Length: 283
Ligand SMILES: NC(=O)c1ccc[n+]([C@@H]2O[C@H](COP(=O)([O-])OP(=O)(O)OC[C@H]3O[C@@H](n4cnc5c(N)ncnc54)[C@H](OP(=O)(O)O)[C@@H]3O)[C@@H](O)[C@H]2O)c1
Image 1 (spheres, rainbow, N blue to C red):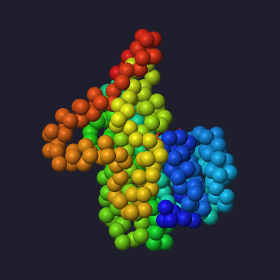
Image 2 (image 1 turned 45 degrees about the vertical axis):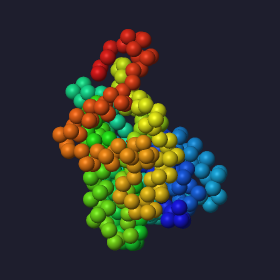
Image 3 (image 1 turned 135 degrees about the vertical axis):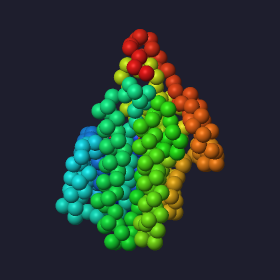
């Protein structure tokens, strides 16, 4: 992890799940962490935890909603006003919406596209020129295996992650020789708050992938950071996820469209609480 020594890293979505883990694994190496998410109390607790544990580490936190159009610019302006230059950008903030597209809540869908696609792209656009000028930088864009295969019941989420994969691959190629690397992290299911946030109110269905298919946040982040230091374009943590995903690359698209139905069955669980309460089912 010497590549991160004395660097300044910005982690989005640092109040929960993979973002907290990115902050914890970067903390022993970097000199400065900038943490952002909406929940200030969670960021504040993490700042205190990390500064107490790592002497010399400075942690800044910024509470902002990345679904709002002005937030990425305001965040980057704020880092500039504090004299910080971002060397490591972890575009991690994101969320899903689980259920059929036709009954989705448009505000949630629009916000998801804003966070997963627009904010990630704008932060990269605003931070990348400084990295290229300095001749070094690391960008990790958190995509998903959902970005590698169309996913019924996760239609828009998977499409946003396909964007992240495509965008990251293109940038990785564009930036060859500049000293800046771009890595797309494509995890399978990871136990975080993701499933709760993706679930719809009053739905009896929950996102519940089988245990053998999951990787821990620790493993996903460790693989991402190692991959980024090697300059890998794409990281898929865990062999049980990686092997079938690599296999899918040689399957013709018309077959793949049917395989994606299997994915739907694999991740679907019933919410016993909701079913028992006999609440209206939106899905
Ligand atoms: N867990 C999985 O199974 C899985 C699999 C593949 C990829 N991923 C991807 O991994 C990334 C991290 O997700 P996670 O699993 O760690 O989920 P999580 O535990 O729900 O964390 C999501 C993070 O994103 C932040 N966020 C959400 N909406 C935001 C907004 N409008 N503005 C600013 N920050 C926002 C949340 O902070 P606040 O709520 O405090 O704003 C939180 O810190 C996401 O991009 C997700 O798509 C997850």
